[in-house]
Image (cartoon, rainbow, N blue to C red; front, side, top):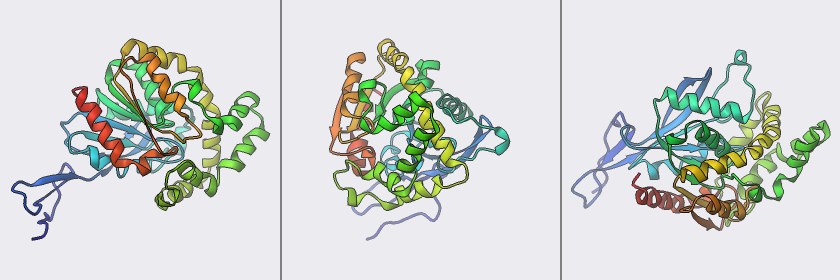
Length: 315
């Protein structure tokens, strides 16, 4: 006996089916693709799960988009309302030219907060990775009570967590010179540089889905994109200056935090994960044999740890 599939999906995006040997239907939540206007930006986002469930916000990093969570979303959505937006200049979020958007982390946080307001989301757990970390933590400083828990997958908030891959960018922070900007462009903004974000440090680099870095590279080639990315590389220095504020938030809030970390990441090294324990007495830290994009290789393991962590914290 095969699966009995419906001809139409319910409005919540789930798919009900009758599995062989089961007496009750199970639900599989596939992501729905949506757009909403927020802060003068047309924000693209993926959503799955019951609309009345607790929210998990998934924030992506460079050079990708909500696409990085395509496999994680269904594994969390049976219990949570999962929301994954694309930041301005990433994925399929569009910014009107007349908006004259300034690409800074302060503005990425402002737009993300406006996005949450547009969806009437006032309370959520947040999964932070790479650029998603400072965006979420800037929001936390403004609305500390909104964040119920943090899952950090290589989402850094400590200077000791900055790895050797930051060296040319740190040099650019100090000089601001066109020559140092060009060095970064030559090294990073190409297909090989984009691919290396995924494959360096990966346990099985040949098994990283090629559509990941190829999609990212295709979108990076849109007009004006190189300058946007170089501006954000430079502006990341403002996040580092705010690390003491982020750490003060941790100490005051004692927000539940799980750090699940690719231990071979050259951008955000294991010391950054261990540092959470200094400010959060109940922080949980685990390491995976992975690089920067651990979620590409260890999707199920990360989902399992996330679900267990949230359950333990009654979320």
